[in-house]
Length: 348
Image (cartoon, rainbow, N blue to C red; front, side):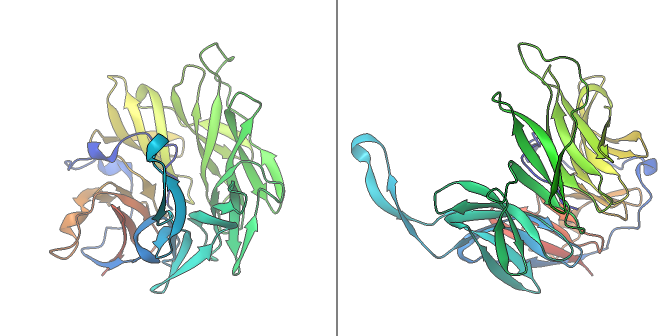
């Protein structure tokens, strides 16, 4: 399953080639020997940013079209009318075809997550210029904000449950929510102590798995990051590798979580959290996603069956340089972002 990018703070430039990781970290099936690469293309404007992948190989995100809009550019005496490409609408890529999902009347939209039915959640610009939460399903787009769902959506699971983040009060603090069949529940914040002059506890939802377990990231009153899972509405802190902070990236349907965490020496290591235990994956591997087979990806690397490999060694010679693996599905397909190009790696 893929992961949302807004919460994560480690720059991908820190990713590097590493030695092997502890075999105890996972017991997945072995990674594919090689992959074929498919360029997803665009909606006509050139750039595509992919965000999520389902088990059917369908992808969503946003892509530029060939359309142009007239805007005011420059400042002061240099202000002038110019014609530019908008950022582009949300898309659905399926069976080799990229489809424009449209907006809510404005210029831009973005798909952030996609479930097995091809339903997409994200945001879309309205005719009034606001960016509202949106659901694309059955060829229709629904304005979730106008329907009463405040806050921004982050993920949708195969049952149609949606999670996101809502502002609380006038302080700009945030709290995750779960929308299950139209019933919206605010998820309780972990208890990290009372608010101080410098801050309070805030949380953001990242994703929800098919068993209804919500993954999120929280900031405590001291501004330390925490990984948290909510099961049946109860929050559980993932802990750390000995240091003050943990930043989660992805969760699979077994409840296993990957991300990075600080050690007792203030180092930053990748981790796998499983059955309440956090395993250190080393200082040079920062996972972004894990599938139900326990295969983990991050940056330009894949970890499977106790072996860490560089994805660039598993694709045909002359392929684009892989630096940012975004998502992996249970069939082993990997979604990769290469600048403004989205690539789908399929195991041979």
